[in-house]
Amino acid sequence: MIWWYWVLLGLVLAAIELATPGAFFFAFFAVAALLVGLLEFLGVLGSDPVQWAVFSVLSIGCLLLLRKPLTEWMGRSDHAEAVDSLVGELVVPVSVIPAGEHARAELRGAIWNVRNVDSREVVTGERCRVVAVRELELDIRSERNR
Image (cartoon, rainbow, N blue to C red; front, side):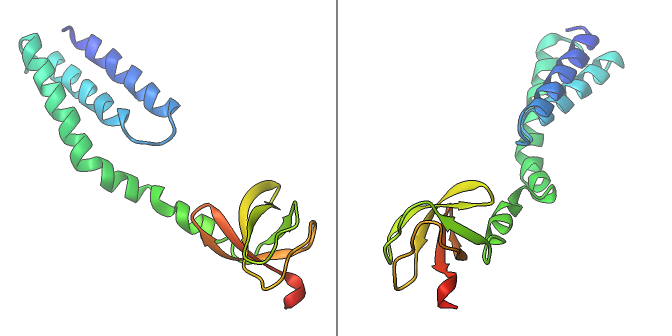
């Protein structure tokens, strides 16, 4: 393949990476295509099968070796900490929630699944606080018990 085809392929793959939500998947293929284009421009690579083999090895090798460290370095695993910071936030139930039951409540303008961990029911519109975060469900307790 002509060297500038590889460069064009690398740029298209880089654009796809930028258009997708930070998974760091296409970036390695983009870098591999750009490197193959550079090597072809310098005359290091010969036939098309050799170019495709080098592209495949570079792409998959970089993907397997570098993706996890790169996503960790970029802080992609910090989502749990951001959700855990909801403890102590004000929540307003949108319906009556009996003690120990599940329902829905408003927090920061969004509706969340909640569980009333209080010993009594919580009424609609009552001020409650988040006491724990369990995945995508919040444990809440009324402010009246404080």
